[in-house]
View (cartoon, rainbow, N blue to C red):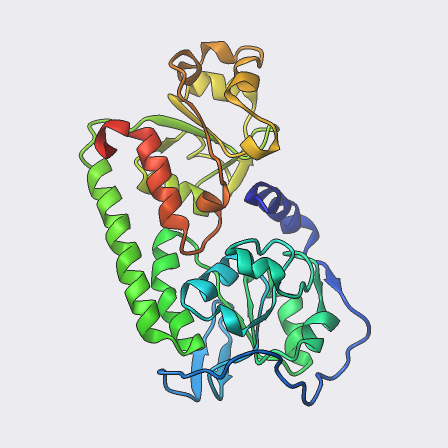
Amino acid sequence: MNNRKILVGLIVLMIVGTTISACAPTPAPSAVKPTSVPATAATAAFPLTLTDDANRSVTLKAAPQRIVSLAPSNTETIYALGKGAFVVGVTEYCDYPAEAKAKPKIGGFTQIDLEKVIGLAPDLVLATDIHAKSIVPELQNRGLIVFVIEPKNVDEVISKLSVFGKLLGAPDEANRLSAQLKSRMDSVTSKVAAAKTKPRVFYEIDKTLFTPGPGSFVDDLLTKAGAANIASDAKGGYGQLSTEIIIARDPEVILLGDMLFGETPETLKARPGWGNITAVKTNRIIPVPDENLVARPGPRIIDGLEMVARALYPDLFK
């Protein structure tokens, strides 16, 4: 699942809320035996109590052996920490790594089938902010342990790995991964800091000209990559610019986050008036081959950061 649909969907959800697919509340099954899930050898201390990103105190009596993930970013992080074998349910959009695609599906990113989640008898459900107001209480009322985790920026993707590590009984793996990612991030930011000027950048989420604004996850990545986001004064994390504004602000680089949905440098160049934009004149229209690397707050975000920085500063990353 490319995050373009998720990003646009989240803008709509700010108004209409999150959908739950479920029948009347039912108690969680008392006992469902795990199938082909190996025993865990946790190195973290349990029982464990942590405060999640919804400001809830959550206690785990033991390292989880049956995990349901309600977000692709959480799924990627679980696998990156070597705990993919304990995942028993994921969303339809959990497409990385390849093994995640074979896991039982519990709905979409925002349309969660509660009864499917309950039927999997998880001992931990990993949710995000978008689930906090409705889905999390419903699952909690059914006796499930739910933890909300939502990195707000690139730094938090790295720092919250320690939380994942504690939850999953993999603190050493989390420490190693966070150190590796931070080293790579620091390498990028130190290189782009040497640049005398920052290129003006327009990041296109879709052809209706939605783009990341201040406070958004993608804007933080663009800033770390050394970009001057032309939508830095937008109201809210994501906004819709007009053609006139984009032409007036004259981006020097255009990143096509909607490449997989049919937009190409050629289709962009054919738009009325866009031939006057510097990025078009200099042919610096850069398709983003996998928007998940840029918009999904998981461990691969540093791949996205490196990709964008190389596109903006090819001379610094030879």
